[in-house]
Length: 255
Image (cartoon, rainbow, N blue to C red; front, side, top):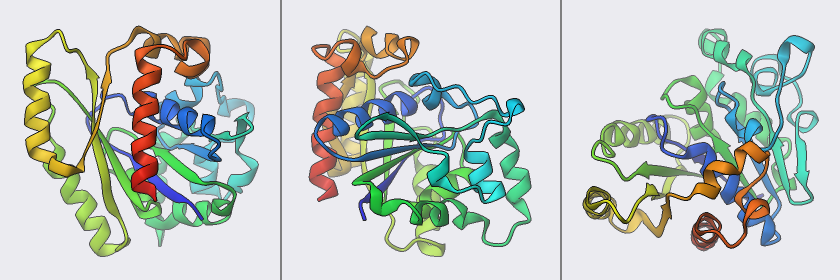
């Protein structure tokens, strides 16, 4: 059974989905069997790979897995031999209310993952930008949390709250949960502010911070429009190099 990582930050626009898509692709290229799980109702991870779930046309999504006990294995879509995806859909936005009165609601995702975990080397969960029931499910199901932090002035806003939430989940539901690491995303070396923020993040996180910094790169922005990862679009781009380096660091900590 491989490790499961929640890619998490309650602040939106920090590159969570881009990171899940491209870390997964980088590790798949290295021969790892990877599953990406989208529990964000915005369903951007599926869109990144050209997979659009229309639940009004009886298409299934992670909503059905969490709320209707639909088998996770029957939802999974193959991107390539080593990279698979469990897509989300807009119906998942109602899961918070539907699960609110459900006994054991925090364990829905963990129980679903148990049924397929031996199939994969590593599982990544793309979390919504909130700290609600869906994110709690991701943390309960995970062995580690990975935090992308944008190199901007308000980068650390909310990080204390996020770490507190991780601590509560660890104490209450998942004693093996660790903060595997954090990384700086959307970095522009031409901006002095980015460099200043990066230094602040290094002081704040210490050794928890991955050495790799994800630079702003047009290929990263263009890849979702093509329904693919940065590696299929331009394997020589800075974005490909950065996520390849981050994937190597994750493998080191995974071991």
